[in-house]
Length: 248
Image (cartoon, rainbow, N blue to C red; front, side):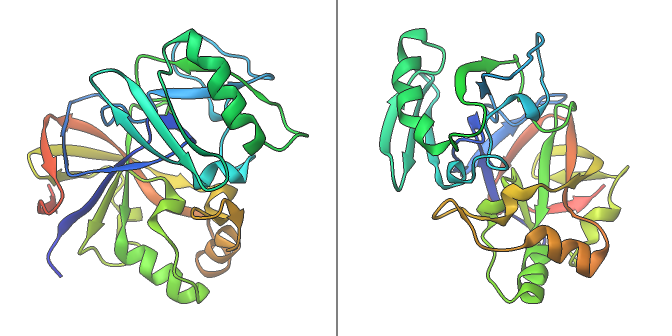
């Protein structure tokens, strides 16, 4: 199979929606532009300036219904539009304090009442990724197909909240790429670490309800619950869906 970039995806608000892109320019030392640019802090958060750990934020692992949100971003106005099958559509500016109450009214019903509730929107000047690295996640369509076959269910890419999906790798080969460079289109990234997965991946991204024991399957078949890798951009450049990739 030809080695191609199959999908580019970003998540403007961490844990709250996803959108696909046709192309983007990657910049050395930076996350995917606008990916996890904002995050929704809950009432038990203990935030520090800059990047913060995921435990401070509302996310699919603790509020599965959030996984069914889709999003779109108007970069020129920093306006985000969210859609959910039960909550409908909302457009707002996360940086505008006047829009916060309306957003909280929309999103609060998607959070379990016995969990810490969303109260604020945080930014870090970089992506609020699940790793302290300013990283992108790279995932393999072959690994997804292999896991789907083992589980007897077609697993959506959207479960994994990835940035870059690659066609043409051998199943699970990406887990051995740590320490290597990968060229995708006009950019080069260095693979830094494997991604250990959480219970958000058990949730159907169409309905926001858990329906597949992904973590159990990973542990049963492979002895770990890793899926995909984190990489940092070391050479800036444009990438587009359909671009070739190779280990460099």
